[in-house]
Image 1 (tube, rainbow, N blue to C red):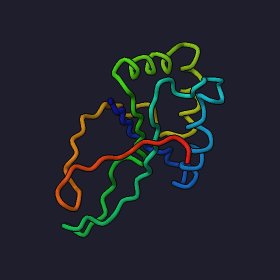
Image 2 (cartoon, helix red, strand yellow):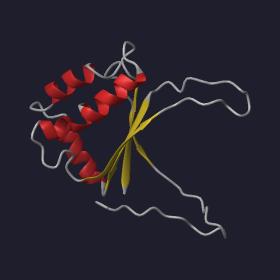
Image 3 (spheres, rainbow, N blue to C red):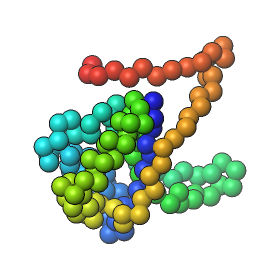
Length: 137
C-alpha cells in the first residue's frame, strides 16, 4: 500500500467554508465531471483533511500550520500511483485541472509526497490495531 499526501493552501480571498464547499462539491469531483471512470483510476481511498489550528498544550499558542488541507490518496502499488500521475499530467487533462485549481488554491506549488507509515500498538492490552476499509454500508 502506498499513500500520496498533498498539502494545500486556500486562496487568500476565500473563507474556510467557501474553500471546503468548493473542494467537496467541485474540485474533488472534477475528474468524474470530465468523464473519468473511475474518477481516480486504481485509487483505493481519497480523503481531504481540513486543518483547524488548536492551542499547543506546551506553549499555549495557536500556530498556523501553513496549510489549510491535507489530501490523501491510497494506492495498492507504486505502479498504480505512477499511472495516475501520468493521467493527471496528460496534455488532455492538465489545462482543465490547472484552471479549476486556480479557483481553489493559493498556487500550484503544492507539496506532493508519498508516505512511509508505522503504527504503534494501541489496543487495551498493547495489541496491534488495524482499520478495515469497506465499500458501502
